[in-house]
Amino acid sequence: MYTLVDFMTHVKGIEYILSILFIAGFLLFWEVMKPRPFATVVATGKDDLEHLKRTGYRTTMKNIGKIAAAPFIGLAYVVMLPFGFFFVVLSEAVSLLLKGCTALLKRTGMDVSFEWSPMEAYFTGKKRRQAETNDGKSAKK
Image 1 (cartoon, rainbow, N blue to C red):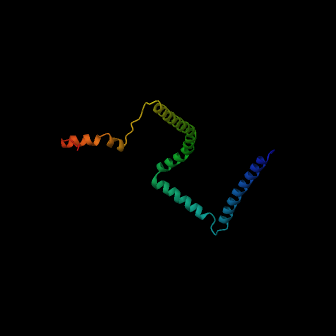
Image 2: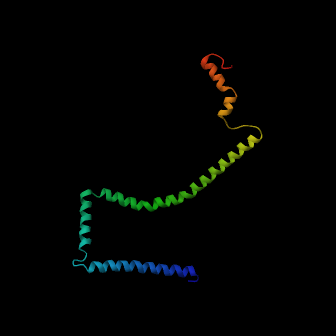
Image 3: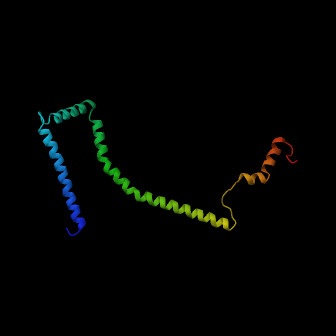
């Protein structure tokens, strides 16, 4: 142990081991102090085995399989995170690039997107032409 981090890690490791040993020792002591030690543990174990025999081992094996697969699913998730990150970064870069190209084309006078505004449509006479086709007469007065 040469650094403070090494020392703290060592001390914390010993603390965690001692705490787990103390909790396990307390539970063991608590069971021994009962009038019939470990009776509830044996009864619970028998109930569990009875439940397994009644329902079958298939669901239990499925659950064990899911528990065994969990670390690998987590590992796959961690492995896929950088790919997702780079996909998002690249899609944002492409989006910004396309926005930049659109702005550049607008400055040169070329319009690359359809822009429609109700006020412009009204003032260009589109409503009047639509009224003429509906009535068959001129809407001019």
